[in-house]
Image (cartoon, rainbow, N blue to C red; front, side, top):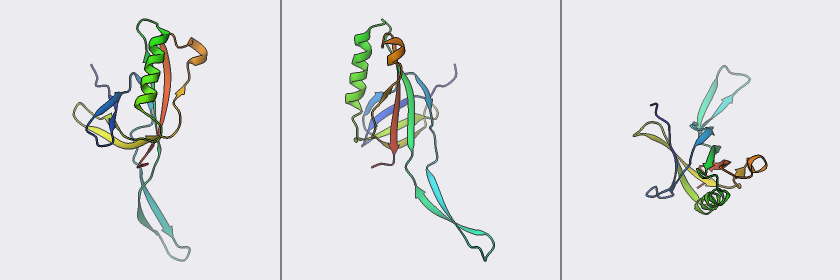
Length: 139
C-alpha cells in the first residue's frame, strides 16, 4: 500500500499532538515561503537579488468528517471538537508527513472560521466537508 501523508495539529511548544485531520482531500502544502527582492537599474546590466526572508501564506487543508452510523449528532460532536480544539487566533504547529519518519512543519494560526460546504446537500448525515484556512508564520 502506498504511503498517505497524515496532517496533524500540535501545540505551540510542539510537545503535544492535539488533532489529526481526518480524510484530507486537498491541500496547497508543501510550499516554500522564501521570498527574494530583485533590484535592477536601467543604466546597468543585470540585477541584484537579495534574500527577503520568510513570508506568510495561507495554508489550506480540505478534509472530511465521517460518521459510520450516519448519525447527525456524531457529525455535530466532531464539529464541536474541531472548533474547541482549534480556536481562532491561537498559535499551533501544523505537521504534514513527507514519509513515515520525516515531515514539514508550519507555525500557524486560524484567523477565519472553518467552512462547512456540505450543509446544503446532505444535511450532515454521514459526512461533512470542511475547509480549514491557516495563516503561516503568524506568531
